[in-house]
Length: 337
Image (cartoon, rainbow, N blue to C red; front, side, top):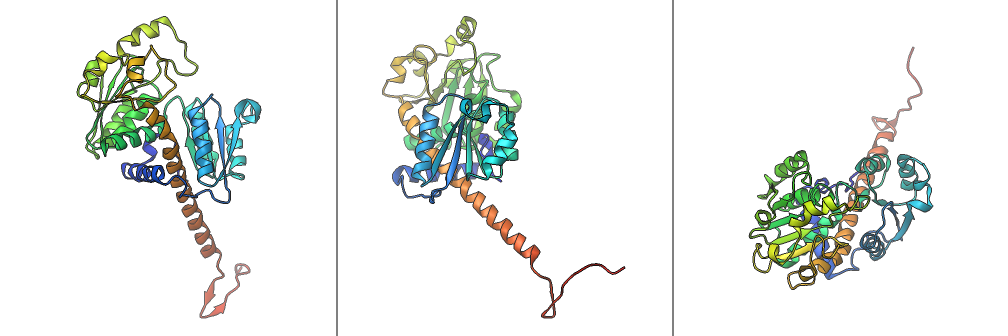
């Protein structure tokens, strides 16, 4: 069973196919009816959400399906039932499961137990659906991601830094991450991203100098410095303030470089109003692209799941066919003593 738990669950070629499908869904948003029936998709929120919730609900509806939205605080997800048991139960009701949660191990446990595709709608470690929207936006702006330089500045030790490294590498981009010590991606993840980049013509660089990261970049991205559940301490803000995406930092990028932010933004903290609302901002185009990107990956996973199911059914029928010999039926009733 194919799942989408982190960005490298799609090969570079598969990522390109999904992005092609997303682009076609922008042009013809109601053509694909992968969930016609309607079939249902469980959408589970263990973190608050605006863009993810609305975009997935609309995506499922536009694919002809029914979104079953589950709030962890009002179901057994918040009352001690194991995630594995819940995954097994939900697999009997729905064609796919989308979850926005905290711990990546919890996500992995759900996927291990589920017999339908599971999609990561955000965890502490990765935000792969967001990156599909970002890459789609870059394609729309530049025609291709290949060979483009994307700089990400700020806190890169969590989901957005990790996902930019992995997904950007798969898209053939030169990803530069500018973050202070203690806020940089894990070296093991960087090594994984560089291994992917070695086959796509991309690369991943990590630096503690925000101007070095941004210099001559085609795209400059940032994210909030305080993820859900983190303390907004004065020390944390002080360390990250030199990485604020402001006019001075943006000026180090290529003229007209696009600005991205996955939202919600803390205006005046990681990004200034001048940049967020300026002519180079593609932030709201990026947010809109969550819808076609998520439709595309959901439809892609559903097609794989159905193909796998058909293959298993064919194999099962073949294995239970009555053995024949010389045109006569041979019935096996036991073994000779």
